[in-house]
Every structure is written in structure tokens, then in C-alpha cells.
Image 1 (cartoon, helix red, strand yellow):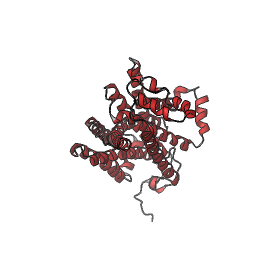
Image 2 (image 1 turned 90 degrees about the vertical axis):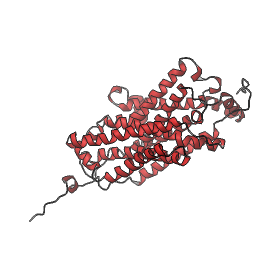
Image 3 (image 1 turned 30 degrees about the horizontal axis):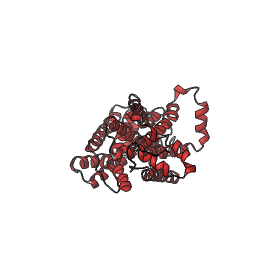
Image 4 (image 1 turned 180 degrees about the vertical axis):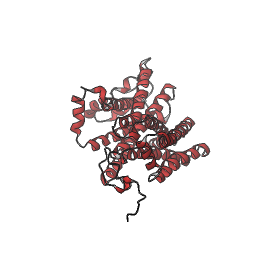
Length: 383
């Protein structure tokens, strides 16, 4: 009389439900994660004395651009900036109960430090000469925005320089891990309650930072100086190592939850290996992992190979966050509405805006920041 259905119960009752996060969270995560990776690599290079490369001058402008673009997602997600202001003013009574209290403090500090170091990485004579050329009424504003960086070099001060680099590394690491820890604090989503995603976000952030040094910074340098300078090989091997480790952690995590996870995690694994399997294969395994691995190992030092591998790494870093986000909340609460998931028009619009902000700011800063100066040593103009 009744034909037995082969569909799972959660497909028979497939009603759309509200998701706690939109894909703007994935945008925010990848932008902050890559910025953290850039900052960490910049700090390591500065610590080792590599301060005469294009990366030393241009890495911080790119990091600043990515962080500012990432912050735009927060404003778009909460819809009401007053909620953020309320958190700053009244949200400290229970400051130890939520990672967001640390995020709204440490991430702006990370942006401020990157902004400061952006000017500290410039030639002081060139910076002084550039400020002297701006209209006189604007000079006080420009002096303040540069934090008078032509007068001192933080990294050259004993102890202070090392302390600044350590602070940058710690803040960069926090920027990478923050979104993963934030998801871990979301109740009722077992897939997110794992440190594996934090490790993945850190590794893909480092790989993305290396990808920026390999492809983006040489391009910015070529646009500003008309010269293409090949990046150091250590970025290639660093990116390769981060990609390999991320791939191991990602698939080991999926294998573990599919075989040893609780019911909720096994349902999430069934979703990832079922309806989302082709997405995992193409966007994480093929584009994000296998393609960069093959190119970095066998591609040599060709410019096109560098750019292609970097695009694959950045694509995979976003795809991984996309999958973790939608898989975690697809079966959450009502356990329905996951088969026809697609970003809405508003999210697509904001994502395009994020990309435009990040790219345009990086190009603007790279074009207006001074490169060198013809002023003799010790003869910087008074500004």
C-alpha cells in the first residue's frame, strides 16, 4: 500500500531554516587569515634581517588592505554598527566568557600595528621627502597618519624591535585562529567544536600569506617600480609545506569524524561525502591542494607557475572555510535545507565589494608610498 522511501528522514522533511552565519563569515575568515600569514612572514623576514626586498616594503600595505576589507564583512553581518559600539562600551562585564571580546580588542590592535609598520618599513628619507611635497595645510594630518615614522626606526631599537616583532607574530596568529575559535564557541554545531578547524585556518592563512609574497607582491612592485623581482624560494617551500600539512589535517579530520565521531559528526561527514563531495574534490583537493603541490614541486621558477599556484592556494583556503561553514550549519537544529544551498544576491554583492576594496586599497597604497629618495644620507627634509 505504501511504497518505502529510500530518502533519509532529513531529506523528506527538507524545510528551509535560518542559518546562524552567512558566507560573509568565510570572507572575513580568509581575509583576516591571509593578513595574519602575511604579517607573520614579514616579521620572520625582519627578524632575519631581510629588509631590502620588495616584500619588506609592500607586505604591510597588503595586510592593511585585507584587514580593512575583512572588517567590512563584520559591519555587513551585524547590520547595526551600534551593536559593535555597545560591545566596546558595555561588553566587558563578562569579558572572559566569549572569544569575541578578545577579537574586538586584538584585531583592531593588529590593524593599527600593521599600519604603523607599513611606514616603518619605508626609507625614512623617502618618507620625509614625500611628506615635504604634499600641500602645507595637509602635512599635519599626514605626519600624524604616518606616526612621524621618518624620525625613528622601531626595529633598530634594541629590545623594542624584537618586542614589536613578537607582538606582530602573536597578533597575526590570533587573526588566523580567531574565526576558527569563534566557530568552536557556537553551541549546537558539533562539527565546529573541534580544534582541527583552527589548525586548518592557521595553515591555510600561512599558505595564503606565502602566496601573496610569491605572486601579489612582485606584481605590486612591478607596477610601482617597472621591475619584476622574483620572490625568494623560501616562500615556495613554505607554501608547499603549509599546503601539505593542511591537506593531511583536512582529510584526517574528515576520516576521523566519519568513523569515530558522534551521530551529529557522522551526519556532517555523510553530507560532506555525499551532496558536497564533488565540491570537496574540485575546490579543495584538485584546485586547492593537488594543483599547487604539482606546480610548486615541478613548475620551477616560472612566473606563470608561481601565479597559478598562488591562485590555487588562495582559492583552496576560501573553499575550505566555505565547506566548514555550510556543512556545520546545514544539519543544525532542524537538520534541513542543505541540498539547494546557494549564496543569496546580497552575499555575492558584499563578496565582490570585499574583493574590490582589498585590491584597490593595496594598489593605492603601493602606488602612493615612496620607494626611494635622492636626498643624500643624513639630509632628510624637515617635515
